Length: 100
Image (cartoon, rainbow, N blue to C red):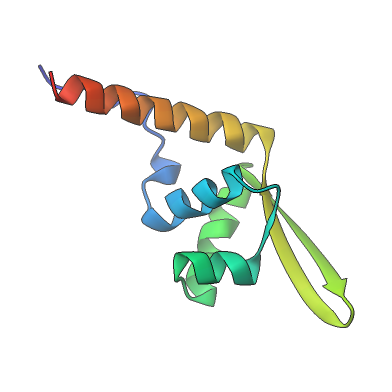
């Protein structure tokens, strides 16, 4: 039997995007520097992946100043939470069916 890949969301195929969503799903919000450090990404790499997720409506970005320093933080949207949860369920099903 060939396992079914339905429900696998291409937006989360990248290791970086999977990591971003995983971190944001368990935190209310996370700032750019923390995400960069946790995921060992470059500024440009993190910026491009967060921008892509933001354009899909899966995360939102908040830019503000703390004192005189700019601070960018990210959080998961409701659509992002639903999409990521569905993706994880599809992966679980894929794994279950692949081992039969």
